[in-house]
Length: 498
Ligand code: AMP
Ligand code: MG
Image 1 (cartoon, rainbow, N blue to C red):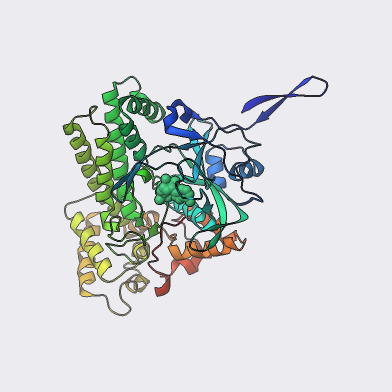
Image 2: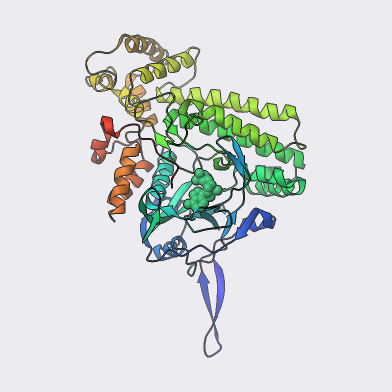
């Protein structure tokens, strides 16, 4: 809280306090950002507030304060907004002209454990990095990001979060006219791989300040280290965290869609939600981004691309790290990813440890699921019905009348593997239900929520927000959404437009 003094007409002084966001980013040289005032959003009204996140942050801003931030007025809350400069590889091509084009870092909120959380206002208007864009966001894209990040959070996947959304009567041109909206995104960092690419392009002094900043903020245990050691710590942690993140995305069936280096968080969180998709039917080479003509970011490419992005990050530290060190970090990525992927997939199958042959068991299952177009999340959730009276609810996901031979053989092998666990079947079932969600933010569901919200009805949005925070519960009120989607509801591809 900042204490302000207010002069009264009789010259006595009254103490007034105004909530305040700190701004640590101004420690960096001016080339890293531009001070900028958000563009006001008139007649703004709240669409949704993430009360669980507010509580987690011990955030005592009230709804009027939040609306003040969301509408870019900044009269009730003291903030020092700025747009960040960064660069990046977009679809493999270097672009030096990037930066916050429609977002602003408002500052940091400090929770009761003295942890700083960036508040970033998305859709806040044009900045020096907007290029030809309008700097705005639409209700559709803000809702998609808000719910998807909460869905990943609920599934235990590292991610930025959404604190609140507001909309207004202003219309924004995309493929069609759409309602304008803003979103406050919250994260421990807004430093991307692309920030290090920017530092590398500016020279050694820039790299030194950025490394010191990131280490002080995220790895204070390395503050006394040499610059070389700091570079190693940042690269190593980015590789390990990104590898673990990718294993989780693959496991929960999340397709990011735009894994450009400017959309990669230095602390390995899911960052920037565009045309993402959670699987309906499993498709090994699924491309969720309509504009990704070559499938660069297809499901089965995601881990490779993350590694490629880590190589780009490593290349920023030339002169600070040896080639051997860079290679070591890449090897650590691969090793970490492979181990985490098997552990995470085994958890989905109710298997407590990784054993010889598990890799093949998982691989064989995915090939079959791809071949028979099996609904990804329902298959794993309904695995809990295997060898019960309701087993047919699992098998009907695979084939309407007869379990194909390949699957019969797979279940035989699986049976032998589960037996090795020496666990009661009831406990095994518990494991399945704890590892596999009953509800999934499928694109067709997000679309229904958006269409209602565009008409001013936010009930479904808020119901899903809370449900996605606890995805392993049964959620009988959402039973309709726990059935396989109809053919026309499946596999929606989306464009980058947001
Ligand atoms: P994205 O594909 O969302 O990661 O965005 C890539 C770049 O384009 C970033 O630098 C964004 O800030 C910028 N950008 C995206 N949409 C807009 C917009 N409507 N107005 C201005 N800049 C934008
Ligand atoms: Mg981006």
